[in-house]
Length: 460
Ligand code: PHE
Image 1 (cartoon, rainbow, N blue to C red):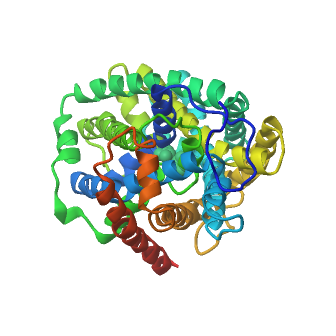
Image 2 (spheres, rainbow, N blue to C red):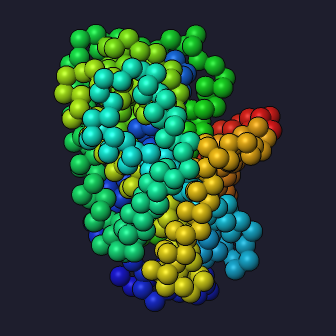
């Protein structure tokens, strides 16, 4: 796995890890993309924004903004052959200002992980709650109160957050191929199997058709400008772009793999899983006559209620929370790897030490995020608690900015010839979409991202 890239004058790593085969690459990248964003966030923002019409806008955002950024990040990583910051530097000059894009992305991945692990920790607690039949015989209000008192308590959520962080660190310590790739290759089929099983259960409930119509019959009168911006922001989050993840993973993709087709397959898989999550949730929500726009509590309050009432619900509730935990773990490892690759390559700290150090720092920030639902509730900034502030700073500022840097760098600095060379793997693959790609990356995608930015400024 020697590094065969001719990069310009940067310190060269002696050997660099790489993913094994193409299936491995897709499992790993799709594993990063598919996460809480698909199974927790997508269903509730779809519910809040009126269903099918929102989904259409979201699909447009994935195509026009998400895909070009994803491809740009893969290009930077594979051509740069270094971590998120090093890749920018090795493709430009030693002190290039583009490296700032890498720093923003690094900040983003670490910040997301801090609050992501909190929600993922909730799902671990809920696996236990489901397995001990804690929702049986409870009224919807009681299930709601149970969630409220759990998430605001000082100890339990932090315990689970730390368990989750330890699992993440364990996979990262095992390495790129034997940890990240091997784990994702096993977990992604498990995830697909569970979600299909849940879809079958949900779709066979009497009265489920209304949920299917909600997802697939557009009613544009329900779509607001804020909904469009939510869709745009979510396209970044769900594809794991703007956070350096796909640059780092791109650096482990072998030269012979077709980057364009991998990017399309990853975006496609991510979208399919989000829709399947919708199909697992909304038909059941409608079959039981529950309000679809429940917001963040949809998964932790509405669903346990529904499971408690449906045939086989005990079993389906357990596997549902296992699904969330698995999806979150294949994403969290990708966030941690961004920092670990940087610290171990550029700061000369060994991989295991780097993992422990970052896990510690990120967990500390995460503890504050968790406490912001309880003891630290009073501490608000710009009207947001610590958790919401972290989420806002990342989703509305650092991800769009990190993505913008990637796409601008590729389109305007790297230039068409090098981009074509990379996408075609040195002329092996036919890249008939190069003109379309360059045009989109130069103009359409940056304009789209600019709109998200302007929106976040207005919010300030
Ligand atoms: N894409 C992940 C999800 O949908 C979240 C994520 C964002 C992962 C950024 C890595 C980087 O849950």
